[in-house]
Length: 455
Image 1 (spheres, rainbow, N blue to C red):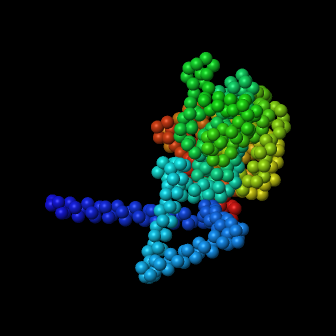
Image 2: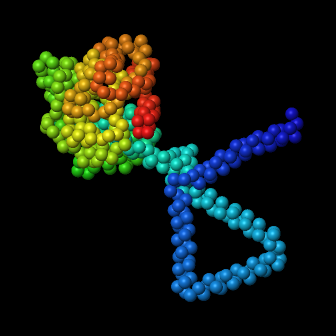
Image 3: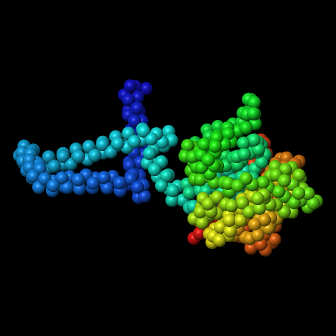
């Protein structure tokens, strides 16, 4: 191939690349003209301030500088037009002015972007547009605990920044239980999961907060996140302030609130007459739960949690362990009263699989009846149920620990006056056969249902 042919091919390549870059740049600049960014109005306001300041100074000194400036400018323009005709000098000055404006604005935005350093390849305008979109999202309150709640939050944060997670503090097992017994703090485990789920830098924070010490006297088994929240509680005075301060440090999108700041302990009465004390012991007892309660009997709700419920556009209950993650929040009377008083879309996300020691043999209606019985009133008007069953491999694995898919008994559920939303929101790991809710799919379905119910 001749050098001329190579040159022509290279030239065509450069032209094609430049054509691709120019539309992207033009599109990016047009984004700055989009309404609702709250940028253009402040630039115009600043420009107006400069003009008013100049006029004020001119009036104050009796317009003398303005008169001479205008006179001098007129003389300069007259000289220029005698040398270069106005039909030539005018367009030249106009083009130069536009070039300077474009150049100056480009460098300004570039400098701001360099300082702020948005997410690597993301442009500043895209970050601003996402920020405005998320801040306009519905005010969502999610109630629950455990990994189910954090999974849902991970999906919801894509649609709204106005998320409040109200989390149980009845956990007394694992690292949280040890800190609760040894130091006397409220258990931070479920709150830790929610904070990492709502954080912007989720992957890194999850690894850091979920890290468990494997060595060290007294540290073995503790997660870094639990120790971090415990230290913050001691510094700030209580868990609420610790979570708020941690949210600022971790750039959390939304809020995480404990249901109560009272040291709550769960108890359950089983069908065989046993009374089990402690959240972790209830599941281990492997009995049929007939009644569940807490000590003290009527813990006061966190005021911020009540305010979030009162201002909410949408309330989601679950997913999570029925008796040890969801119902403990509803044993706070002020929270149940606040939820029941709201005439807004309220939905319960039912678990995909039954949980041994808690919901053995439970159907969808059994889950609803347990919640209604525990709080003494109806808190939601719809229930979301997964449609698809897990694979044979997963069913066999779960059956070995006496866990099975939650059966949808339509007629009985309909008698309870709940609208049934049936959809596929399941995630199944092909290697481990673990069955979970798919974060993105679940959030998308919940927001779609909200849009329809809210319309």
